[in-house]
Amino acid sequence: MIELAQRAERELPPEVWAYLMRGATVGESPWERWRFAPRVLRDVRSIDTTTKVFGAWRSPIGIAPTAFHRLVHPGGEAAVARAAAECGAPFVLSMRATTRIEDVAAAATGPWWQQVYLMRDRGITDELVRRAAAAGATALVLTGDTPYVGRSGGRGLPPLDDDLALVNVAQHLPPGADAWAAIEQDAGACVEDIGRLADLAGLPVVVKGVLRADEARRCVDAGAAGIWVSDHGGRQLGRTVAPAQALPRVAAAVGAEATVLVDGDVRDGLDALAALALGADAVFVGRPILWGLAVSGADGVRSVLNDLHDELRHVMGLAGASRIAELSDDLVVAR
Ligand SMILES: Cc1cc2nc3c(=O)[nH]c(=O)nc-3n(C[C@H](O)[C@H](O)[C@H](O)COP(=O)(O)O)c2cc1C
Image (cartoon, rainbow, N blue to C red; front, side, top):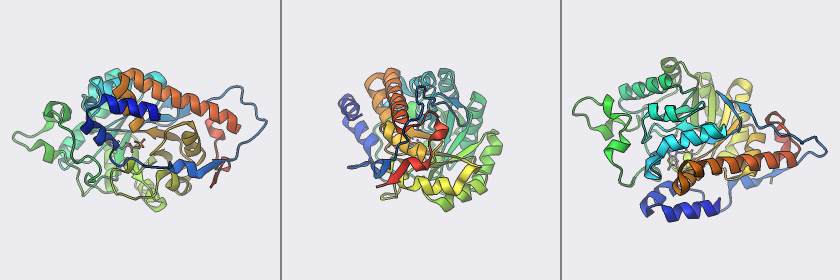
């Protein structure tokens, strides 16, 4: 993975690389705090990684929503969606996509989900949500950690043509509107929006960016079908607890009432194994997908997903588990 990152850095203009890497963890991965206590003498001749999470998947390692894929490669979100579907991995389309929702849906030969930022212009937000539902999204991922964009996040974006950045919203803008102001995040978003979005789209809503057990409960009580433990790749509030640390408490608070997802610094099969054992139903990667995309388009994305999937299968067997349902928290011990 380090080599892939280095190749991507060579491939990309420095300002695009800096944008991708803002907020990235430096030093030890927070997943390394978890040590494995493997089972022995289990029949692991065949390893089954299939899972059902708002869709049926071959792999529980999916693609987190990231903005502006065409900054990285002309194939953009359509290439990523196609690669994900071919690998049987969940794909989440960012609301800050540089490809039309309908074109991404056409490229995806499997299920996909739509990420949602509640924008200041709620009318535009609703139009995009309706279009995603009509195009076949099977879930909405409402990002809850971004009342406004953090200084280490999207600020200082590399130059981006309006016809790329506004490709999904331009048609919904009132005449003469300031497009960039209209699509800024609405700092007044609240838990009532969960039910409103679910009704509008007729889809389950996952809340992304949760790091506390009590907030997870509050979102589930307000109608969330899933909780996505995430610190937005370190790009929103700084110095938060790591998702790798917050996950067990959130999973315990949510229980079987909702699906639990996680992202942040997942870079190999061991990270994914720890996350699944600690209660996640699926695990997501952000930057590695962009590195793969930068280096070789859809092929690069496929190779990141396939490598992670192969590694997960390998370490599941070594841990003595042959099915995702066998991954439980007795397999991990805090260092
Ligand atoms: C360049 C970049 C753009 C992102 N854009 C979005 C976005 O549009 N919506 C969102 O919910 N999260 C966004 N994220 C956060 C990711 O969904 C995810 O939480 C994070 O990247 C996971 O960490 P990882 O990169 O360490 O795998 C973005 C992250 C990066 C690095």
